[in-house]
Image (cartoon, rainbow, N blue to C red):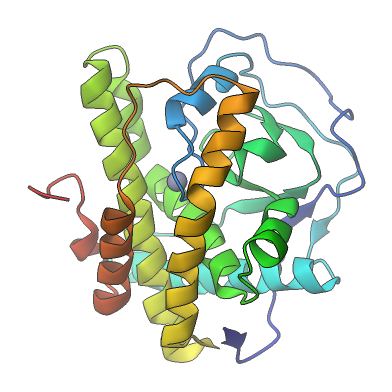
Length: 282
Ligand SMILES: [Zn+2]
């Protein structure tokens, strides 16, 4: 994909080179926080276990906020800016106000209000501090190991995480939080799948509007995004399972379902067509 202009978001928090140790205060623990992983289906409950350990938002000092100048950082800023424009418009049309999330670039590990972020988790969104966390080694994996040289898969990952931010703003996260402990594990997992598929659909909505006025996105780009997604899914999960436990009971949306909801968002460009929670079949 190629952007029509050079506009970049000023909401990128660049922690690269800052290190994960510059922590102001550690959380006191005990609060269960839902955070969500990247679009290939990192098990949310895995992240949730990680998140149980911290609750107070730690501070990372000396991380510049603005628009990174290096090539990859700049592209991330451009994608984020396009999501800001798209979602601001959609919220305005619905009579609401969109609040921009921040995107944190980091290396290896960094504290978040939802616990310690680690590169092995893949990109994730923390609803407590409303930040998307991204370790760029994930993008290097996409490019080098999985032969996905195009940049659209990267943009899609960011748009998916921003989709989770939209779910925070529209109250979906609160509903998920309330379900915890009140419904069966199976039921909760099914809702997690719907949460993920809706974020895929929201990423499609973004792509729909971005391609109208902000960027050129070809069919090949979209195919590449979906192919790359399938290619790295298993690998990431395998790596994940070596690091810590992935509960057997969890079911992710299938590749076909993810493709379906993403395409649906792209085709319609309307959030009304992203009601995965009301859909009889996914
Ligand atoms: Zn997700």
